[in-house]
Amino acid sequence: MVFLAANRGNTQVFSIKEETDAEAKKILTHVYNALEQKGYTGIVQIMGYLLTEDPTYITTFNNARSEIRKIDRYDVLMLMIRQYLNVK
Image 1 (cartoon, rainbow, N blue to C red):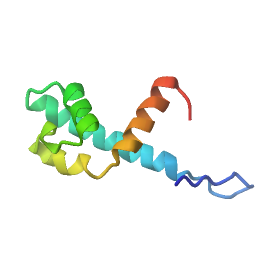
Image 2: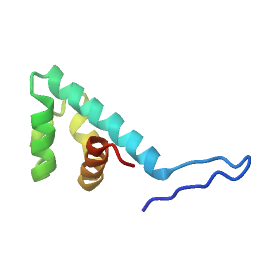
Image 3: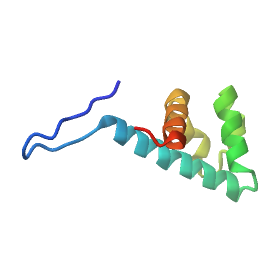
């Protein structure tokens, strides 16, 4: 579910979608870095996880496996497609 607040004068504008995207990016970056530090190809391992939901694609190093399970695969795929197509 996405909630967007409209800008009405001095009202604070926020977007849960943007906050969720920012958290997903933070987690994916952390997981990618942990995989690379352990000698894995981060992109390949993350794709393996996204396609299969098999957590063994993700190292336990730096708590990466626990972190990636905090985000929904569907949300990650949506984020990636939006980023690739440069749409919101």
